[in-house]
Length: 275
Image 1: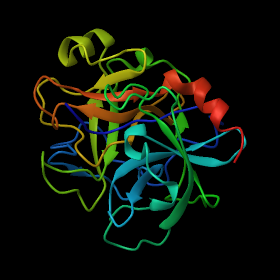
Image 2 (image 1 turned 135 degrees about the vertical axis):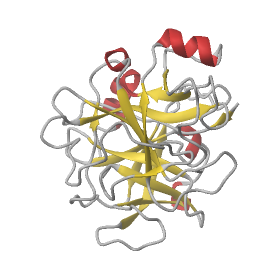
Image 3 (image 1 turned 90 degrees about the vertical axis):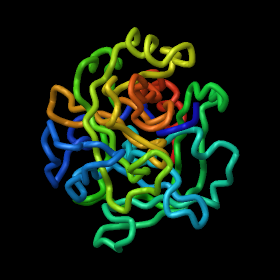
Image 4 (image 1 turned 180 degrees about the horizontal axis):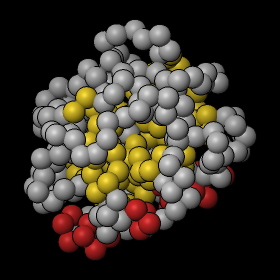
């Protein structure tokens, strides 16, 4: 088992007018060949909460999601596995990006001021795989930079729903990261399905899973920490999971596992009361 992707999540945020909307309409479901592994390119800037976390000179280390706290300030949520034990000064976060090789009009790079890794994060079991990234400057919002809503609903409310994973991760297992942002629609599975297919490493107290049991479509290395986005009843997008781990990339019978955002709402609220 190796870390694959990740997830992140949230607090008493401002959910309503200030999150989860898009200026650029994404592809509709279903999509042909809509995998990040082997992948379908997203409509440019249709997932404006997607962030690219970079360690030193690495062009891509992990993904992350922009979220808005009740104070109105924006933070980045990612996987603890991405940043645990590292120094904030070694990291940068890019937002407003579609192609990582192009300099785009609203693209901006921020230095990282502080990481807050969940106090019960287990690097061995990847439990509580969530971290908050605080940046050195306020994030400038625009058509291509906008936060996702942090879900107020348990993951069970999304069982059976097709949600979206996005990232620049590898397009084949063991391959290179993608230059352009890719997306895949994946059904959220029940805890019973997750336990049956993933086994004893699955812990429903902090995890959830999603994917096709036939395999072939899913996240891969480099997608860790990125969002699992689900459309809510208001027509906005909620951050429901954070890419955390899996057995390889989109293998048959092994759905990907995510940090379950709803489980961390109190923690996120407590840790984001200041800037």
